[in-house]
Length: 152
Image 1: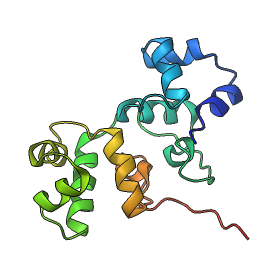
Image 2 (image 1 turned 60 degrees about the horizontal axis):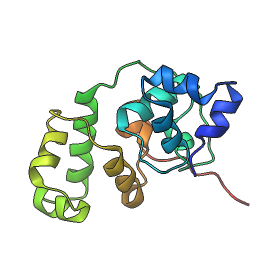
Image 3 (image 1 turned 120 degrees about the vertical axis):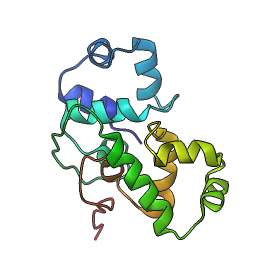
């Protein structure tokens, strides 16, 4: 479950203020906050920077909250390198990997070469079978894996 509403309240932001910060309509922001639409990768990155938290926490992948302050801009070269590293680390050809993700080789090639920023839907799918951190994939952290909280 996303932490967008919680983080917005913690910072005493209104939906209108957050939507203006992101330069999107208030209705679009509401759709993201209510999980009715997938937040684009660039917006995930921006929100995490506004709230100074790790993306994995903000997106509900972990209860482990880390204060992170990073560059305002995504370094697409870092993202593309890490996306390629994930596929190669799984010892899969481009064709095998794209079949797994139900996308085209040309689309994935554009992600790996940095021509296009990877869609957040694919990033979230990658976390399911790799446990790689969204912060790592988007170049906000050098910690490759999602931090898991011990539940004793």
